[in-house]
Length: 395
Image 1 (cartoon, rainbow, N blue to C red):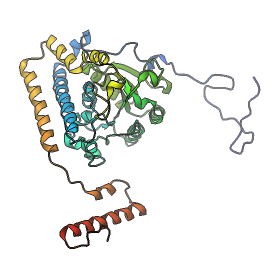
Image 2: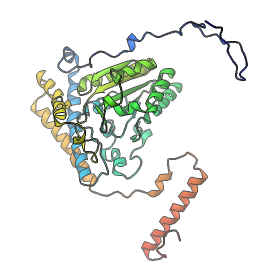
Image 3: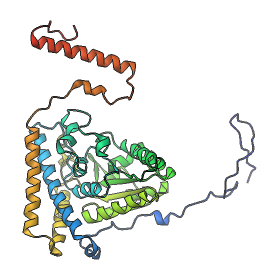
């Protein structure tokens, strides 16, 4: 092998800094990838011997929340058709991922949702009306992220991933045992922010968990056109992070895998990438025509693997589901839907000046000028409406 010459910052020969365990001509130290690889088949609980060891009350709570979540998706979709929401990306068929994600966290942990994760935000305890504020077009977010420990819904793909890593790392530096859970779809794994976030999380050993809800499509683009990896969970190995593969429609399995990953991160074990195999039953949004890129037979096949039905069948098999629980869950879901209808019946009156409230801790000169100009225009409009002004905004 030819002699190596190491250059310093002036491009001049310099002494080579020693690297522990490595010498020129030798391979760098490696981590055994085997423990990081996901299982060959998605992890399942319902319908397997593992179901017998699952807490019955947890299964009942998951059932109540899945029923309410399904009704939430239906009502939000209806509100969109009525013009009460500007857009709604339904998570119908993905409710198990949404509910399990919320239940796997402690109150002090943080959730970083994408635009399709309003159900997870509601399951986290955020008011349904506030959770839908962004999709209604009223404000950038309708809830206080700090008070709810829930980041704003993220519309750009995967940009919440580095945010989750940064918060988790900062919490650890502060001595907190906070864990961050970032939610994204399969399309988000094709974005640079996803790769950068995983790399930083691994290097920093940050207490963060990534849940990829692989519903098969990034709008109309199937997964086969995005990635040639065996599974998206295999991507974890390239960053030195363990990958887990789980049946995303098995609520008990998703909850078990996420709870294990969250507590592992809390104990100092570092990040985990979880891929949940699920399906988006509805179109991408109300503006999408899903029939143009997928066949009805495909949708019907996934309907047979519906997360609500899977859990209901498992509960009945163990004698944990009676008519009272079914009626109570349905009644709770209807109360939620009725509240959504009632609250969305009234048009809000957003304050335009709130646009400047949470941009910088110290507003820039440009922002101050824009705020002053808007305030003057609003004052002029108010004067005109009172009949005391010229009626020309800004004068």
